[in-house]
Image 1: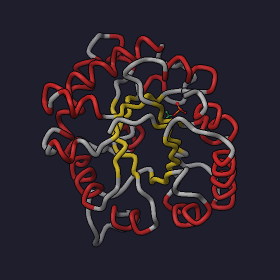
Image 2 (image 1 turned 30 degrees about the vertical axis):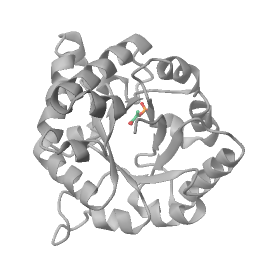
Image 3 (image 1 turned 120 degrees about the horizontal axis):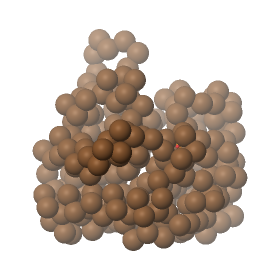
Image 4 (image 1 turned 180 degrees about the vertical axis):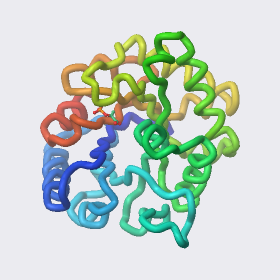
Length: 251
Ligand code: PEP
């Protein structure tokens, strides 16, 4: 079912002690607020088990920022979907533009990761989005359509229905430059249309599509007011409990 969701992506930030403290602060803040959305924090692998021990899972979901494209074996340094699931995490960010750009993650690799995440009952938060050049040359709608088709369209309708999508224009990530609410709405409606064409209107209507890219307390309300924007994937502003909560309470 389509839900409003605010998810934090801590990226490669915080020591274990700092991360546990941040999770405790968010958890505590949520105890005092009637949140109108699901709230999730996606944290470094090293923090997952400890963070799971200090949060109230009924109020705050936990996710990883990535998982391997293999189940187990000789892949030194990798962390598999079963390993992530064994920590108590329920979500995993996949296809983040930083993974695509710096670690060469292709749609073929992402397909494997999505399958393994689903097999292990992890909800993928699957990221898509165009770079600045594609925004400027007008190909951005086509680019995002291809990203969805290439990585996700071999899924059954049932499995597709388990995904959360996050539209993250790469030019807006960590740059302080947010997409306008109209730009976000145009893309989110387009994404919903692409899903509807393949899986039908019901699946499309039930898919949560988050916006990510320099979302902060000051712009979250206008973005979340758009009919096809179902929440946010939050990078920088999720590293401070107060600013993260400022976005959570924008709903
Ligand atoms: C992200 O990396 O998912 C993100 C949205 O980052 P930021 O909010 O810092 O732009």
